[in-house]
Length: 322
Image (tube, helix red, strand yellow):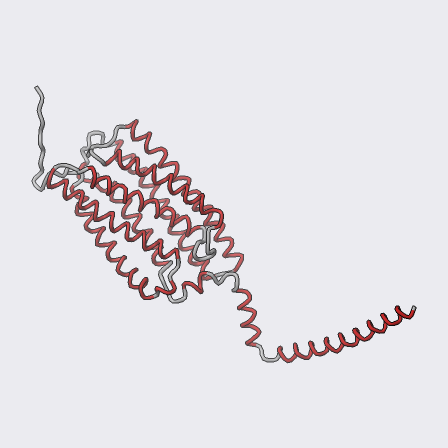
């Protein structure tokens, strides 16, 4: 005997452990709209002074909003029909993988000082792009296997096989980020750029808090799944997924606050090489008595130079006579 069963909750076909996520994505969409409006006002206001880094931040905000809307659409469709269309779910996870990759590369380039300390990445551009493409492929494969065409968790071995490359690349990115950040802090400290140094210290503190929170949450997630083999805690399982979106949004807010568009963005970002020369010129212009002294010294040097020139001509004439 074979058959098929249909299960429906009072509010729809969405499973109980996934139902709270539908409302969660509504709130996340509103949060992205709020930060997007604030950022867009500053973005349009100081359009002539926008940096390439701020273009990347704008792209991350747009991708995050688009991803939250797509997740909500996917869950609403699943709740109404009881099925997850392959195309819609694939589009959702693809946008999510792109957003995650661009966010990681944004943090990496910021840690390298791009747009603030250095105008380009130089020879590191190809390496950063190669790492980004590899990370995107690993994340995309994991998300498609986990979400497209299924609502159940992937089996242990299959998930382990797909999680390992993604986790390894993520760990490598974190190591590269902190290594680059330490070098950038050393450069700023050597150049005595107090404003930028303070900004990067705030960014490093926020990044350190994010990493500590991520490690602690991973430990909690392992504990949660180990102590709940039969999904008896289904009513609170949605928090495991929601935490990562909240953490990514919080770090994005910090980056938007530190690198907000302003009227001095272009001049402030690339003033490192001319900083000492401008300081010297300003200090010379503020002193009133030194220029006259310099002119007198120049005149004395010209006089002495003229006398030495005459003596040199006499010496050459004596040599010719000899």
